Amino acid sequence: MWWVESTVTGVLGAMIAERVLRLSYRIVRKQSPDSVFDADHVRFAWSDFLLWAVVGGLGLGAAKVATNRIAAVGWRVATHTEPPKGDDE
Picture 1: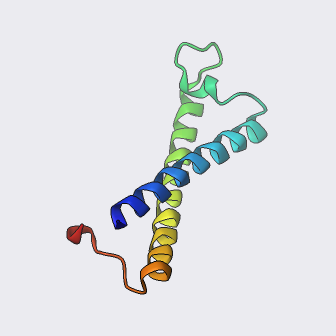
Picture 2: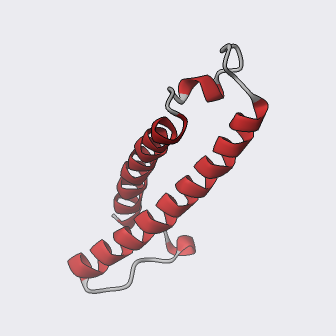
């Protein structure tokens, strides 16, 4: 059951993080984020790609930590026990 809860919160967190990153890109750069990751696009630039790859990695990493914490809190509230460790799954 822990695997289901942590997987669902992880997927939802990744979806939210992706939307936040795309919105942030639109606000900062005033253009669609698709041009950054499509090497065939006329506005593609390696410097933009590398910058947003790093930002995206940090954003998704933060989302993973946040969703793991949310899943653990939900588990504690529902079961009144600590969530299983990684090797107990």
